Length: 195
Ligand SMILES: N[C@@H](CCC(=O)N[C@@H](CS)C(=O)NCC(=O)O)C(=O)O
Image 1 (cartoon, rainbow, N blue to C red):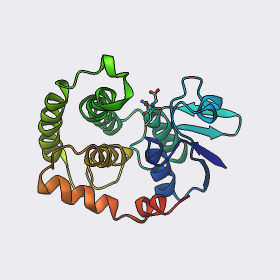
Image 2 (cartoon, rainbow, N blue to C red):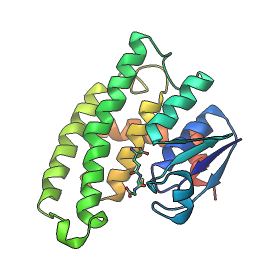
Image 3 (cartoon, rainbow, N blue to C red):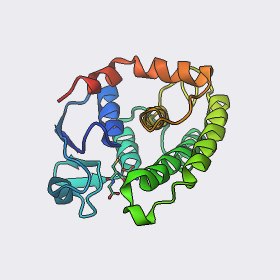
């Protein structure tokens, strides 16, 4: 049985959503970032982590990639051009969405007051909107990569949910409808109902 370490409000939601999509049972330790509990699994105190037997894995994208490869679900097979395109999308989402939201969080509340640069926030919101317009254009079908859901969809919608929580500007209707259809999936609904 897998165990997901990290709250639903963190990037841990990505891992829980992925497991729900695959129909795999798991237990959940809803500890916060930098808590003593989190440090038992990752000395950095970062969440999420995944416990798989004797192994503890970290980083939400590394975990989703591992689960996808291991169970042959929500991913193009490794070593194929389709997988290289999916990985390129995943890395682009990390560069242009996750990193922007994380930088915003650091300057909003993570850094000590004296290291925050409030002026950067408007620039990050503008960067986010530019990337959101590109993401909207890049949606290839019902899902980001075409006909099949991949963990790139989970990553992207998680970042959009994060942006709503951080009061970032609204994105266009096409992107909204695509994100809404993913949020309506039973697997996403299931994680909201947990704990
Ligand atoms: N790239 C990592 C980032 C993990 C991360 O920074 N998680 C946040 C919570 S969502 C955290 O633990 N922050 C505490 C810190 O950075 O000290 C992932 O995707 O798992």
